[in-house]
Amino acid sequence: MEVFFDEGSKLVAEEFKNFINYRQIARKRYIEIMKTSIRPSRWIEVKRSLRIITDVSDKQLSNYLKELTYYGFIEKIMIYTLYPILFWSRLLEGIM
Image (cartoon, rainbow, N blue to C red; front, side):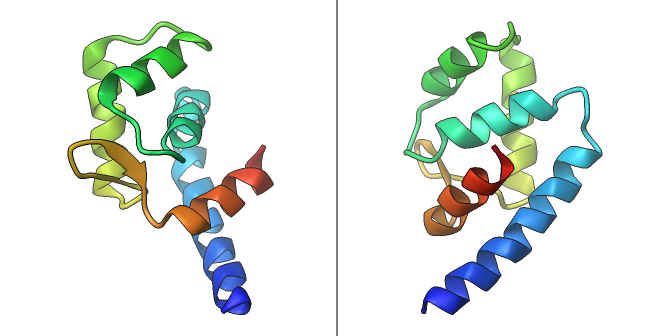
């Protein structure tokens, strides 16, 4: 099972790196959203976490969340959360 998570984490990490490589201007914002979403977070919690690094409009934040949801990096079930959580906690450890 551990090997499965390690291999899966590597694959997902590579996909996320490719995703943010094409979005250099918003790179820090996407990473901050992902860090916040390690634990289930409501929209306002994600917004507050982004205020630490930059001011972002409500529309921009909604677009970032839609983009991450579309590509399968987060999931919205009343709140935003990473999917699957075990992969992302390891992934973000490697990026930071």
